[in-house]
Length: 157
Image 1 (cartoon, rainbow, N blue to C red):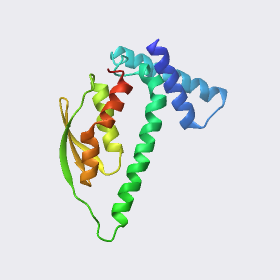
Image 2 (cartoon, rainbow, N blue to C red):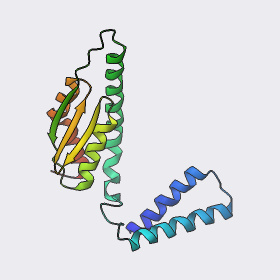
Image 3 (cartoon, helix red, strand yellow):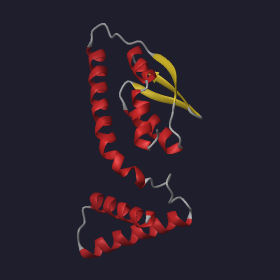
Image 4 (cartoon, rainbow, N blue to C red):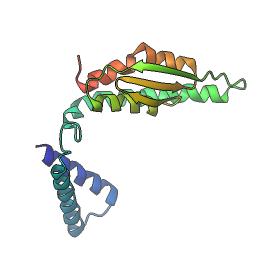
């Protein structure tokens, strides 16, 4: 089932990016998607970590929440930058990731990096080193709201 899902996703992605909808080109795209899916299966990367389709249902709630967080953070960073006194307070902090899988920790680290004003500098097991433009950004991460959201997204308790 995961193979079919991967081939369908790759074909849909190819179709969206190519812009060619003639029967011949559609056949080429479908063939390429199937060949890439077969190559991925042969390399043994079509698993829950390499193609996490089980997260699709939870993505419907997680990604809109993340988009709102990115917008709020972008607004806060814009206000700091446009302030004539430039009230930045660069901070390094370490947070513990409560996710159970490598995919969950990667989603958490990437979610932090996608949020303006924060970047994941290092990942060492379940400890993430974060650089924040302002101390409030670091405090928000230390509070753990994003960690809980990603854990729920991953399916954790």
